Image (cartoon, rainbow, N blue to C red; front, side):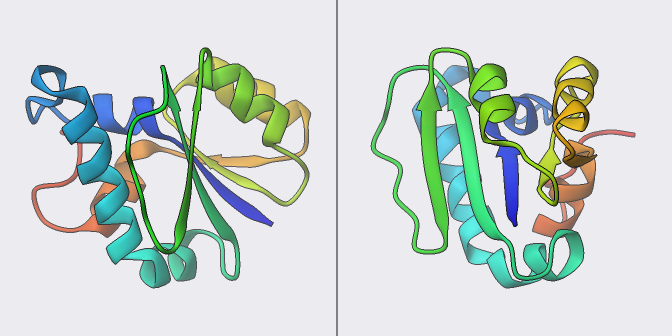
Length: 124
């Protein structure tokens, strides 16, 4: 079982200036997920491996508890990864429909951001 995070969607769901420095925003999000990996798994997908997928070319993003992938189209990559039993974190309705067809379930980006702590969640 995997917990697959649509990194670009989650990053874009909080207006924290991520667009000014996308590589730094990616590192920040992965770092936050990595630091809270145990809590994130416990609340969203107990025992799952964590994978964060971003759109674009690879950048230097490292984490101990999180696998990070880059793809020219993250939605396609996430769809290809997703299978029955996986949980996909995204607020993208089209992607949610695609992964549901493969047997995965979804949770919204705001749920993950709330788990990461104060000031991390998207506006309601």
